[in-house]
Image (cartoon, rainbow, N blue to C red):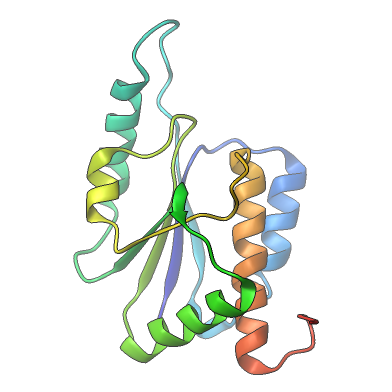
Length: 156
């Protein structure tokens, strides 16, 4: 199983890059985890957000292979405890499918991405800035792996 994160937005504060890299660097090598950034489409002042969201969606979908399991991070998605996420990671590893996670742009993800998604995952009921969502995603992926392997990172 290989894992990618496709994130719309290519300029993050340095603290986001530092924290994300810290957790991403802890993930198991066999996952070959990598981040692929797609530049956010410039929003015209007063212009429709739907146009930018659609354009970003097309760029994201062009990077997703047909056999990959797509998990979209969306505030309306299913929430998991850390233990439940660890169980999902177990399930995905058993299928052997490669995973691609998507964090959309400032206006979310397009309807086409949501339609293609195998799962919609909500990190929180709170609305999170995209940089913080990246960090939280990477930390929870690491936490899920630590639960799988009995690593002492997670404590009940």
